[in-house]
Amino acid sequence: MPIDPYIVLLLGTVGLAALFPARGTGADVASGASTAAIAFLFFLYGARLSTREALDGLRHWRLHVTVLVCTFVLFPVFGLAARALVPVLLTQPLYQGLLFLTLVPSTIQSSIAFTSIARGNVPAAICAGSFSSLIGIVLTPLLAAAVLGNSGGGFSADSLVKIVLQLLVPFLAGQVLRRWIGGFVARHKKVLGLVDRGSILLVVYTAFSEGMTRGIWHQVSPARLGGLLAVEAALLAVMLLLTWYGGRALGFGREDRIAIQFAGSKKSLASGLPMASVLFGAHASLAVLPLMLFHQMQLMVCAVIAKRRARDPEEVRGSAGESAAHLVQGQPQDRVLR
Image (cartoon, rainbow, N blue to C red; front, side, top):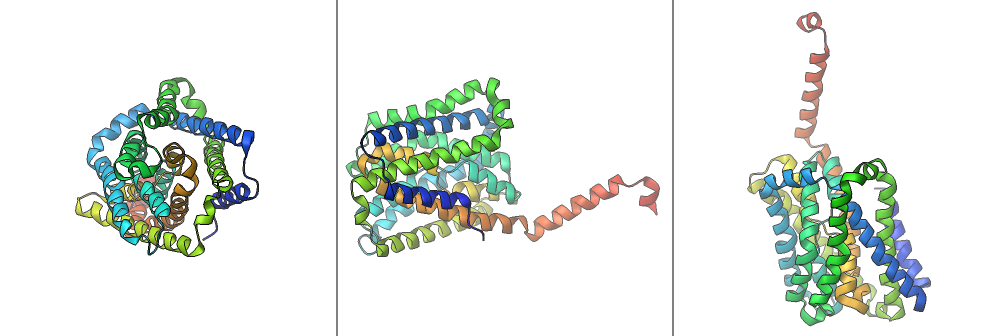
């Protein structure tokens, strides 16, 4: 598959932080700018989500509960089980980052995009990703306090307030102002999409700059990095299988299972990065390394799966049947009879 340009940009941002890390006043400016960028990103999320869509999505509660269980129950269980891999494959700091990864909410944009490509239930993916992100604003820090404790870098009520102010309050502000700016946001979706990605790049640069100035990267050897990649590949494979075949066992149809698979198997870089910067402080750069690697892995793997789902035999037959029906309906009656 061709390389996603955004993955190249992310890697380039890490390289830029390694060569020219922000220091002193520059680091303060970069940190403030990244905080404002993420707040604006969640403001846009709020402005995009239709309140009616959110309320209608509540009717499909079984699907949303399934996604939430995958995101905030199954993932953390596997994360806790990975403790057995320390110190054979993972160092303690890398394991903490991996465990934090399992606590992060699901994605919004990529879940919607892949569900659409695979011809799944797009409205369900929109609501599932949005609900996961909103619930995760509160639930992820609480889970981090429970499973990471003091090793997580200082969870407190103050850190929870910071996360709520940076993520939830802008989202709610976007919902309130959607009545007036929703049309503008919809018309300029592509331009604002660049703002989304630019915000994440800025946060990545800030986090990795701090890691470089503190010498954290000397703690990660190529062998440990390879071990982390292998563990994350296994984690992603297990979650993709569980969400697909588990959805079938629970009686969901094909379109719903597609939404469950893409919303229930992925983790959000946009939500995880600012949370990590608050929860882990100076060690955030090493803590988000597993999340960054998993994010890129899930994008590449899910892109392949989405394209294969779109070519499923049952989907092709369904599309052909619909096309034939439209063709017949569009013919004059005498030609149909002949």
